[in-house]
Each structure stands twice: as structure tokens, then as C-alpha cells.
Image: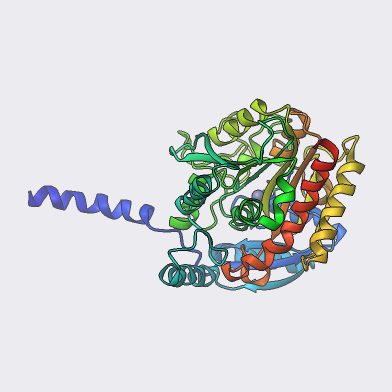
Length: 418
Ligand code: 0X9
Ligand code: ZN
């Protein structure tokens, strides 16, 4: 007995670090403001798997936040000075930011009113989000149904909420998803707020008069849960391959110009396109849902962070779609509406031109293959100088004006297809 227990000890010691949560102690976050000439320098660093670009923007004069682990900091600073890149140290110990985030969540969990179904002062766990959807389905059974479009890699239900005030499934549909990127917590929070307003705020009932809404608040629940339990900075799915590295970037996995540009063949990269297109169950179940409802879906929005940016196709080429002026005008209108309500100024444009090239992304596929003309990526604001996501206490002040943009999209579909 004793001997065999002793034999196990080294094995347990080996396993222990793998089970521990990933620490970001000493990780620095820099805000860079590149000039036109410096953009290629940034593009080169972007290829490195060990430097984490938090925002993908690629415009001169626009800030780019970058997480640099301790062992690369000297080299990174030397690079900055050599190329004279304007920069500022935003965070000198990222783990401290995450500690505060966890403390807040703990305090909230204790003080939370068990009566209230939803909260916008904390980032909810996946089971809390599903519970909210199910509560809505039972409390508003005339208008709300909740279905699973499939299961995640780890077997979690991929729930979709359908909001419909009538019309027997003949009305135009607005499809929204959020959380394909696990760490972008503000995106599911924004989707929940949209759901909350459409269902529970009687003053917003006009938005569901002629239009149905299908919303998947967390498209990558395995990754989402992993960011709470193991690694706050996880972005991809959690599927495993024999190669050793885990996960695929769901937003490189769609089969439209798949893996052509701005994505990686390296399974360890954060923008890994996958072993083949639609290799991930999460992206393929979304595709199936879109295909099943293709006659009715008139507008697609996918929520990400962070920007703020409003992006339309294409991501794979600098060329613009034929109807880009329609997309641009609608996007502008949405931006102005949320700005009038106190929201920030979103930068608008095609993905390729505002950001770095990216192919196999969902909003390109939805337009290019599924044929939904109105297809946008909305990159919500990040945490500014406090980190990746806004502090949970700021959620409401972000999603409230954001909803005004959603209202513009809703009205547009009602006016043109309703
Ligand atoms: O790179 C991405 O997948 C998105 N940015 S993020 O920082 N949230 O990762 C941008 C995707 C924009 N859409 C297209 N490239 N079509
Ligand atoms: Zn994203």
C-alpha cells in the first residue's frame, strides 16, 4: 500500500500544475499607437504565438493593446524603441486585474438577490445564462421558446432563444450570436441585455411586432466556462487534436475562403483555422441553424470585443461587396443612435480595411455563402486601461446605449422586410 502510494507521488506532482489555473502574474499590457510606416512591424509581431494582440485593428493612429509575458518584455521594449512606436504601459501585472475581477464576482455572489432572474453588474456563468433563458421561456411562453441547436464539444447545450410575438414562423428573422471567442465576456452580456429588453421591457414591444429574433448568447460555452475556471485569456473552442494543442478559432472555421489569410495552420495559435472547415461542432451547428432558416434570416449580427468597431464584409479581401453602401449607411445610422444615447464612437468599415485580414470568419460566410446581405461584426468596447473586458460594474453603462444600435437594425428589418 505504502509503496504504491509513494510511487504515485511524482505522478501527482506532474499533474498538479496542469490542473492549476493559468496565472498572468507579471504580464504587461502595452497600448501602441502605430503610424502608417509602423503597421508592418506590428503585423510581424502578430504572427508570434507568444504575444497576445487584444484588439485586431490595423489603422494608423488607432490604439492596439498587446499582452506581453515576462520573458519577452525586454525584447519587446527594445523593438518598440528601435521602431520608435508610440506606446504606453497600461497594466504592469495583469493577474492583479483578474484578482480584482474574481473578488468582485465573489462579493456579488454573496449579496445577490435570489429573486432577480438577471443581473447586469456581473458576468454570468453559462448555467446562470441558460437558467435565465429557461425562466423567460416559462414566464413568457407566448413569445419565447428556447431550443438547443446542438451540443458543444464537451456536451453542453448550445441554446438559442427565439422571440416571436406571432406570425407562425413567417416573419423575417434577425439572428444574433455572441461568445464565439471565449474571453470576450462583454459580448454574451450584451446579447443577454438585448434578450432582456426584447422580452421583459414592454416599452420595446414594437421591436418584436413584425420581426422575430433568434439569439445564441454563448456560442462557445466550453471556452467561456474555461475562462472562468482555468484561463481567463482563452479565446478558442476546447476541442482536442492529437497534436497536443487545444482548440480552434471558431471565427476562422467557416468555409468561405477558409484558411486563406489572417488565420493560422498552427494548432497552438489563437487564430488556428482548424484541421478543416467546420471542424468545430459549435460553428457547424450554427451553420445548420442558418441553413434551416435561410428564407427568413434577413440580418446577422455577431458580437465580439473589443473595439468599438462596426465591421462588415469582407474579411478575406480589401475589395468591398457590391452593396457596401447599404451596409455602411445602416451601420452609420446604428452608430449615431447609440452615440446619441451616450455610447462611444465606433469605427466603421470592412473588416479587411479596419482590421487585419481574416478569412473563414462567420460574417463573411453568412453573406458570401448563406446569402444574407446584411451581416455585421460588432466589436463592443473593451476595458480601457483596466484590461480586456470592462469591469462588471460598467456592464450596464455599456449595453444600454449599445441597445440603441440594435434598435436601428430591428427597425430597418421591420421597414424593409416586415
Ligand atoms: O479576429 C476576429 O475574429 C475578430 N476580432 S476579435 O478581436 N474579436 O478576435 C474580427 C472579426 C471580424 N470579422 C471579419 N474579419 N470578417
Ligand atoms: Zn472576437
